[in-house]
Image 1 (tube, each protein chain N blue to C red):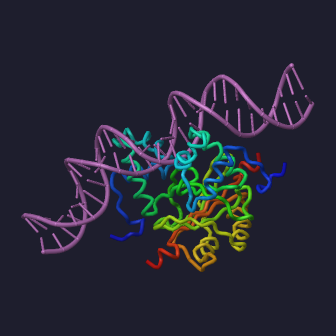
Image 2 (cartoon, rainbow over the protein chains, first blue to last red):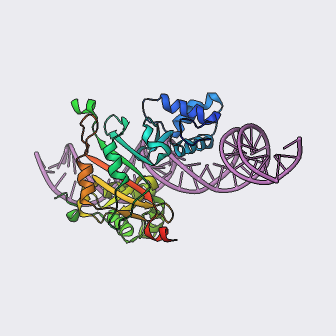
Image 3 (tube, rainbow over the protein chains, first blue to last red):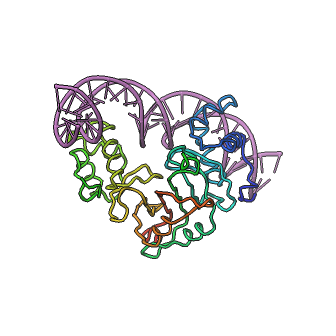
Length: 135
Length: 135
DNA sequence: AACACTGTGTAATAATATAACGTTAATATA
DNA sequence: TATATTAACGTTATATTATTACACAGTGTT
């Protein structure tokens, strides 16, 4: 089976948890996910974490590291969780995935002092979103 | 008193914890810090977290979000914790702060689709360090 | 003196994540 | 079809990371 995430067949638990995150307007935390899927038979943290790990691995969701929370991927260019960038509002906590060809090209080609290139990156921008700027 | 971190007078707990992190060749985790400073009278997690919070705030240390660990800042351009970039080796876990004028300029000026600029960022690159590449 | 501000010390607890078992389902290959 | 392999599942217990709540001490200001 292909590894392109559009075609990857999710298992039952993975699907339940992905659907929940995908519907959520904001990033979801693991124990909030757990609480929300208990009625569907997922009872233990480990069941949630295992599904999250897999979903991250195949690029269907991303972890927002600074928030310990998970968001569905809506950016076809960041499959397999290699290259992610987000903006995070420090007031309302709204998180948006950034898809900028310029940014991803710049970072994918970035070399450090020693000329090393890196295979993955995660970038989190912080500031105020448009709404909160106007307040 | 100035807010430039070179001049900020640390309190006793802050100094003890900063010195420990500063001497460490790798990022340190909070409970490892706690273990190491217990002989100096710092007994409780909260004492550690309070010092860490302050040290991060004034830019003397940075948190490596993907590792829940803390590293001393050796980059005079990233004071006040606004703009940080690291490379992380996925094998040996070596973490290095990146100081690249080009990178920081690019990111500080980055605007999203809506033309929004953000006031802070944190970037983590993942890959293999030089040593691990050769193995 | 009264107040605000920052830091401290302590205990308790919350929130996040993993280890260690054994079992079951799906896939691959002989 | 048998069987080996891999990935996922379910459960219990536990490890790790981080915060809440409360009382108090030092410092600087009004």
